[in-house]
Length: 272
Image (cartoon, rainbow, N blue to C red; front, side, top):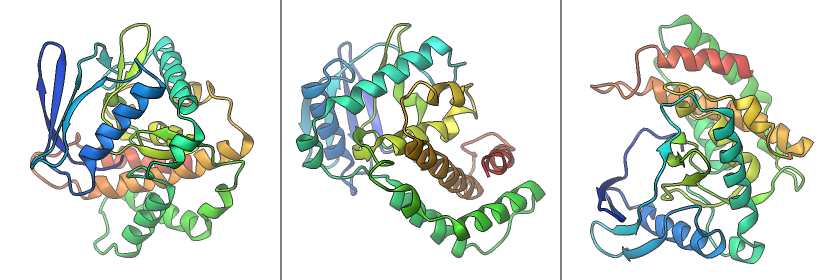
């Protein structure tokens, strides 16, 4: 999701990949194994096959089959690639039956968590940024948030339950020229279609080092009017969350290029 961290180390073999987790206090390894197993059962071929897991080890490990393809991140994502991504996501969203979906936990990220995180961060903000566009965006975001309620876009016609990554980083999608397959399930779980699409559409990876036509991408899904309103709401929330995260990106070296926070502020203002 919208976090600036790495949770694992990866060991590559000819036909297998082992993820050794550096962070597992939030059930990351279990989520990874559960997600791989679930898709292997209901949508085989869309993700790596689960091979072995040492979930109780410290650190825990998950080994899976190695799949081909190039990450979408860092590329100009073509319309054929966007169509392939939409086909894969639609297949995942249809694949897991309701009974199986209801039996798994909510993903690590979800709409309520994002809403709470954004409100808490803005409420506890102390030192203001010096860049005028960032100050303007934060003020506009606070004004919008004062009247925005998640409940207004959370009705049954807006929330279509699905299995999802709950992480919109397009580095998690591998394209081989024909199909897109999924990686990285440590945040995965029960989600909803609008949240999943908003996650991708507002993720930093779609623009900071990539080209991604969000309007074309969203137009590939048969969304209800209520889902579209929920996506718009969640994209604004995510944009606020990203801006706050970027303002906290003060380490050395920086994880993102200079000016990324200002560009994110401009994107937030456009969404608002």
